[in-house]
Image 1 (cartoon, rainbow, N blue to C red):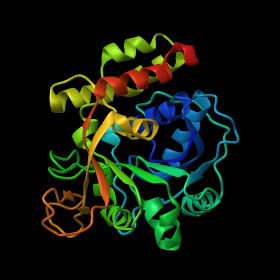
Image 2 (image 1 turned 60 degrees about the vertical axis):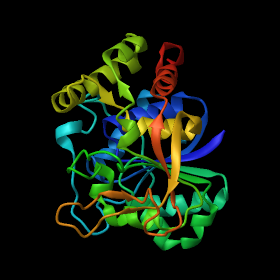
Image 3 (image 1 turned 90 degrees about the vertical axis):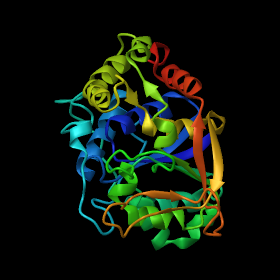
Length: 312
């Protein structure tokens, strides 16, 4: 199985991504690193531990906290979407005895990449602060990563935090620029252009049944669905982060183009915008495989199969 590290800022869809990664049985998850993003680093780490408890994951699966704030900017949380606790209140009152690791996420990434040269896939579903720090600390790791799969950006549509910026890129655009330009041999950008097509509906949740996972998914996504409906007119939950996990499982779910992509960091209106050079006007070497289409039905079938009653 493909060896992966999940890097998360565990809000609602990160949690669902973790559930897909572990429930699919098709990924060897070596560890999970956490970062400030949707919620604080402390909350993201606690949420991650709670989800692993829900999944009855082994205590030997490490959870490693990382950056508590972006490289240069103040933290920017997204409580209005993910709730005060980041996961829609679904595990309110639940305690976890799982203990996070004491070392930093950047150190852990460097150690694992060096231990598994050419084998490791990094699935990044939060701001890219941890990986930017690792790449700055140990530039040699870039050549030894099998692939980096980033949930972030939007290149042909509108943003979800500003008119042009996707949330993960907006929170730490300096980190995103470092990662995009670090020279990773395979970087896949799973942006809003495709994740907005991967919509979890009430019908899909019904297929999960009255099970621990089904009840969790229903409760955690309830307010998120309401807000998505208010904004977009569709009662659904966009599976942004789970789709990045799905791409790690099966790249054939998406259609990609190979382009040069950069991130705006010095604009009054456009900070965090991902700029994709579709016509090669900048004459730069492509640095990202940009997802432009997705087989949403196949992905949703994969997601439901990983969480359905036979797995509980």
